[in-house]
Length: 138
Image (cartoon, rainbow, N blue to C red):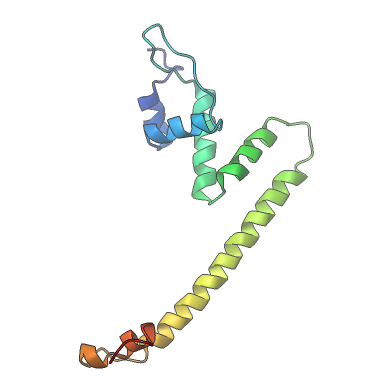
C-alpha cells in the first residue's frame, strides 16, 4: 500500500486511538468518511491522520466533542481572527478551574473525615463509616 494511504488499523495505531473511536468520530462528522478501495477498505491520508491527532489532543485536554467540532471548523478559516478559538479555550479553562476547586473541597472533606478515626477501632465504632452514613443504625 502507498505510504501516504493508511488503512483504518494503521491510522488507529499511528494516532493512538481505537478503530471504533475513528468510526465514532466519522459518525459525528468530526472525521470525514474516507474513500474506499475496490476491495471496500477505507483508506486514509496524512491529512486525516493530522486531524485525528488534533482531535485526540483536544480530548486529552478535556475539550468536549462539540468544542472540538467548532475548533476543527475554525481551523479551516485561516484568514479570520482567532478570537472565537480564544473564547472556547477560556470557557474550557474556567470549567477546569471550577472542577479543580471542587476536587480541592472534596479532598479537604475526605481529609477531615479520615482524621476522625485512627483506623484502630472496631468496624462497629469506625468514625469514618459514621461520618459517611450518619443515619446508619448503630
